Image: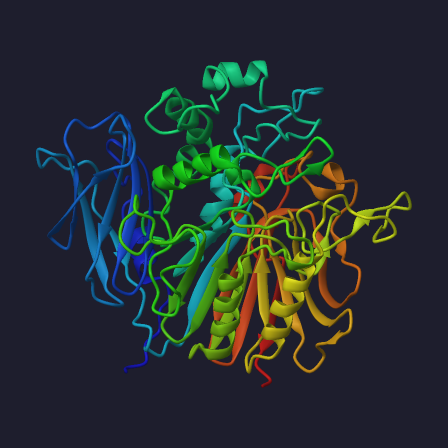
Length: 524
């Protein structure tokens, strides 16, 4: 096929459009794309009494209602052409425009050679502006306005795709940490009108309105319409099931129970796109091809395939986590088989693992790959057992590292969750000698984290290298807000990391530039 260069041309067109793009009654829009399909989640200022439609270069795609009231709608356009910029127009049920038109580009065909693919990736963007630190009244999160500025700086780099890796929602229920109580508080009463009723479904009951009041400020207010031309890929993590990962004698928060699962599924169903099908990913993996979702969609395990430039493996490490001791895993066995198979068989220049849980570093949390706990000396280690930690998690970690290092490519993990920016290369993992092809681990940077959310505050330590990991450190973990831009070329991957932190002058957000860059070159 013809070689092409993809440089975020759809975003360039959107950026070049007049600043006064009219969103009309559209509150938020989040699209996803593959080479032949586009899926879009939307919400409107008020419920629509008739189904809206999406015109894709003039072809009419009917809207499907996502909620009970008719305020949330989704659109699914199939049979599209690869590498094509489409003009999208939303109309109400009477044919009246709901907002200005906008462009969105499909990905290149999986067999197409691509000179460059640019990705924006970040983690931990959730949080409600109304939540305050109880003893001081100070902001718990970076404000929505400043989070939007951080995200806008990433969009200014004109990425071809965006990955939002976990913790889109912070609204923990029964396992909330003592430093910030949520469930049962007066704050919950004022925002939601009371706690969820765990004995009834989420959608189609009073729980639905409570869910919207909790989540709208964290997703609708954050994203609005600014990502309308940027295909998005969302991975869910522990907080997206409305709990922190915790194991204490009183109970264990994961895997999600039935009600947590309903909350996580409902949030995805209303607010952001599921993963689109991919020929290299089995349609029967857990969380895929559900009868109450559109054909071929996957909720937990996804693929971002951009021609032959890159195949990015996206996986939620929480929904199907198991507690089976030496046989436990963060992902089921058939998901692990898929990951290993793609690392071995993909025709792409680059195959990248993007799990929701970080590789190489630890802060002593329960739901990590590693058994480390923080000791009285301030170091993490394994001198005392981590309550209810599962040895099988580390065994699965070791198998994935081994498969990654064995690739004839640059071995790379880009992880979420740990509220930091970092880069290092794993040369040894216990008895595994990975020096022939060290596995690179990158922490992409959190968007919303405030003073109490950094590992050093919440866990008593900044991220530290896990026991048994020998790491060649390029950038030790930095507890700053930020994101990472990644450029994939045939023989190399280039990284540009951006940062800011609550307490720094807000004027810096208007001129963010990379503070750390590095390049990984293919040696095998």
